[in-house]
Image (cartoon, rainbow, N blue to C red; front, side, top):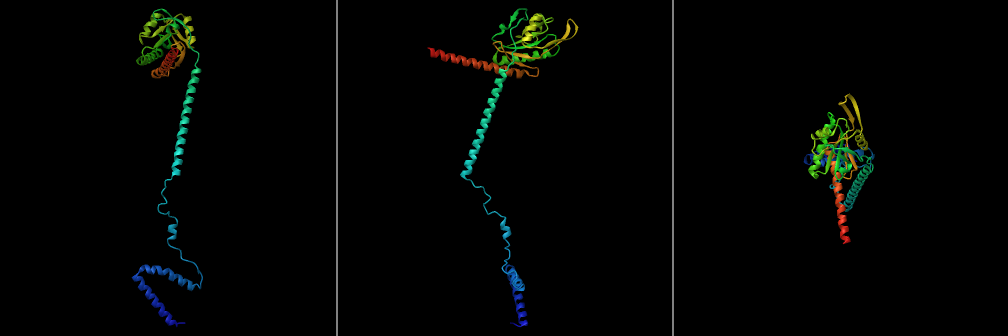
Length: 298
């Protein structure tokens, strides 16, 4: 064992060397310091803590970091095939839903046509010149029928203007295939001259019809037209409350559709146009079949 004085001299020499080394290489001092402190603490603690290693300073930093390039999504053929199959499946499902919707729409249209109310029927009236006419005289023409009266102050003129506009729209595309008809529900005042004068204000092809009270009642009942005489001030001064409806009749004389007051002239013309085109396509198909049948017979 060295004397106490020799140990103190040795310690001072070690301290001096560390100071000199720190000035020459500061990093070396930083590296040696933990080891020296560990040795001192081990020797002073009498062996306690033996086996414990100092925590690596970069361990906590590297633990939560991803390796370089690990954040890139790599392409694989398996993922490509899966994505393609999913896209094709979604598109096929969309097409199925689309066809189902179209089928339902056709079914609704067919149901509406099958559920068409039974309106219309034979009638006998007189025209603007007092000549007797019947429903048979209008076969082969599409009809647009309106029931009103010439002394109507506002509603009837508006509806007659609408009727005129519809006919003009159809004439522009198809020619004179549709005939507008005005049937008076006021036979007491609406004699043929009065009806003729009234119709001249709207369209030159309007078939203005009137007749006896019995004839008018029969025609109005066939189309289920409501009308009721209102307050009467005199025999020539009264109004009539009535249905505000236009009736669309086909070339065969059968009822096709009706249009209420809220429908515009364009909407009415579009509905009539669809029926006219459908009838023409059906007629064309029949002619083509007949042509094939005739050729087969020859």
